[in-house]
Each structure stands twice: as structure tokens, then as C-alpha cells.
View 1 (cartoon, one colour):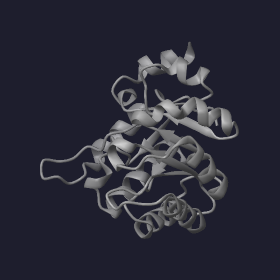
View 2 (view 1 turned 120 degrees about the vertical axis):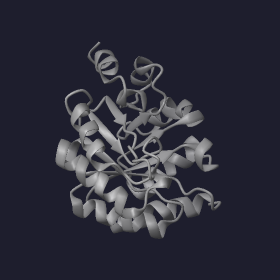
View 3 (view 1 turned 45 degrees about the vertical axis):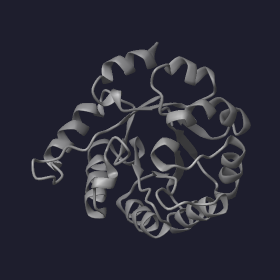
View 4 (view 1 turned 180 degrees about the vertical axis):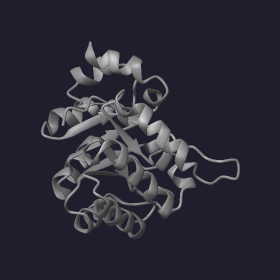
Length: 218
């Protein structure tokens, strides 16, 4: 997988708060030849405001537009039960990569975090599974050592580190060079690549894809 810049796409909503699926499709089509891929229904996609059916239809639409290998479907939830259902359904839709933010709101111990990802992995064994670490949004800190133990226990394909966790990209990439580790900090793509990261998953790339494709090419 040659992804360097993935766009963390926003979810367009109608005035009544429902998902504007036609607008979402137009956005995906706009980005299809301007970004390496998309993260769908993530933080920028306002996933807490989406029900399960809305998340799945966005994932299905993105797969239809870009193909299954150019998206990462975010299926994370506060609890494993919901995340497992979403992971299973996203896999049935054909997603080849899924990501799950760590449990949030409900405090989780390191063992419970591992169990959360293991249940997702068991429910959807085919797609590559990415951990999504974003302590400012979840209230959960995953230190590099814990991440490495988690990756080994679960068989992660990679991760996205956002917020202060982006500072751990270099350490985790060095410790587990076989993983594809993305940064949510899109202020310095070159620094992320020098640190051993696979690239960035960028909210700004949804609005300014040409800037980031130019940086990637350079």
C-alpha cells in the first residue's frame, strides 16, 4: 500500500441533521484522484453524530467510489459490542482496512483496551485493523510500550496517532517497523516520513488536497 496522504473526510449534513449522502458522494469523487485514500466516519467525519446505518452507508459509498483498498473505514465505538457489529458489517461491505478509536467515555484499563481490539479482530479477521489513538478526544492515553504490546497481541496492521499521541510516531515506528503508522498531525509530512511513519491522515487534505499531493510528490 503506497498511501502517504489520506484525507480524513468530513460528513456533510442536511439542515435537519441527517446525512447528505449525495454531497458525501460528490466529496469522495472530488478526492478520488487528489488523495491517496480516505478515512471515512472518523473524528472529522463526526462519527458520534452518526448512527450505525449512517456510518455503514458512508463506508459503502466510499468503497463504491474509490474501491475497497483506498479507504480506511472507522468502526470505533465506546464499547466493544458496538465496534464489533460495525467491524463485521464493514467487512461484509468489502472494506479491506478498518480503524477503531480506543474506547472512550467509559474508562478502560490496558487489559480492557486489548480485549476491545481482540474482539474486533475476531469478528472481522480479514480487513487490516488499525488502532486510532487520540487522547484529547477519548481521555485515554496509550504509551508507546502499551501500544507495542497491543499491536503484538492483536496483530495490528498499523495505527493513527492524533493530538499529543502524534509525538509517539517515531518511537513506535522504530519499535515496530512492520506496522503502517500514520500521524494525524499534518503540519510536517516530511518529518513524519523521516520518523518512519507511513504518512498522514489529514483533515485539511479534504479541503486542500492539491497542497498535500504536492508535498507527497516532493
